[in-house]
Image (cartoon, rainbow, N blue to C red):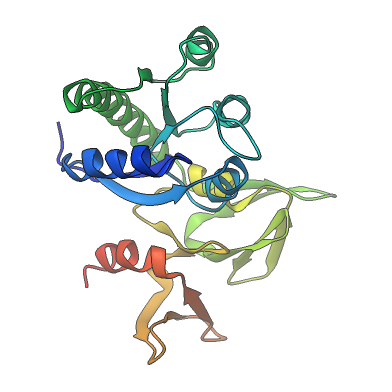
Length: 245
């Protein structure tokens, strides 16, 4: 198996359980902890803002319970492992394509088996996605009046606009009702990368990455407007790796 790093989200409201999960994840070199949510509503916000490969999720959560989250998110490309003290939701969880169902308390060995299972699925999914993206040369979007086929090399960046997106090209801007995360999943990850919860950028247009005194980053694009975009702190490391900095 490739030595890839897979982004992980923990959804857990109990502090001891959350700390144990963090410890287990730190002992798995293939996993990278990229987010923590202590409530269901915060988890949904994170899942909308950012793409995670793997989610470890409790069921009994404040605001929105884990099964409701799974019902909403199960058709997307993120893999879910349920971590709970209650067995009665197992059948429905597997019907909703949960990768595994861990009953608390569970050992690191049991956790590791679950991770290995998820990694096999992730690798298969990655290969399928890479194969389909190799053939992708245009992004199809639909507006109120027409359908457009936008060549990927013309797309400079994509910005979120409430519950829609604006695709910025060298010729004009196109608005679509698709969410930024939905578009991100369609585009080749080696060319397009999320730099902020509100921006997805074509790496071919990035001309510089700047570090400001306040601790924030910005990038500048090589386009007519020399567009400057903010880089979210949680996205900065992935961007540096993509730019080989």
